[in-house]
Length: 322
Image (tube, rainbow, N blue to C red; front, top):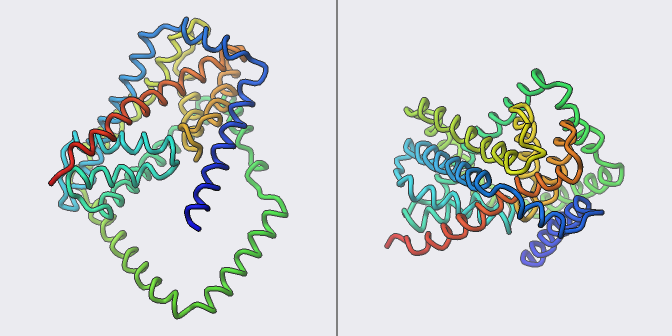
């Protein structure tokens, strides 16, 4: 039953990606996009990919520091391999890449999944805070230009319809009644869940009492700096976007991050394209050039995940600790 649910779920996610991509490239010949990719300056794209990899190297170093308070000391090389393995897995199973990188680290270092997963939660929470800070800062500095993202993510688009609210209410009542009828059976698993939550919270306490706070802050800065460069450097690969300034880079960083965060196969394929295209329109970039630029920005992330991530996932099996 679970397998059927997963097949249905990921099929729907893939269908959403296809619909969004179809909407993105509607009215355009793929030959035109391909010609634009071939005529782009490859050296800038290579620099963008290198920047992306450097971002993941600092992420691996930060991840290692977060595990030290738990008396776990994996090598940066192994955390880097595990991190990129998770990046590769995310292309096919959105949101499960974090678990995949913990299992990869377990293969190489014999580190239990529970504590490493706790450190991943802390790490991702840090990135969410940084992203929110960048977004809020951008609203103050680039308020007019940021308005397009507000329009794309307006409150109206996230308010559920009456049908959704009714269905949710019915399901909630069903869950409550079922829980009451099966309370004896559920109690056993409830107590196990409480033990798991307590263990998780204890680990978070250890991690937050980290002696390497300054280095964690420095690594976080470089993670976001090189991630920003992996997007900004793509602008120079085609002439229409080569004159864009840092403010454009910040806005595209926010738009692309929101797109990548979408639980869609292929690294937010479709969602990222639409958001980046809309953001580039602020700077009077034509739709054709915006589509090409969005394709190249997503391509840099995708190539890194497929080639480097795929290679690291394979390598993690050869580095298996006996």
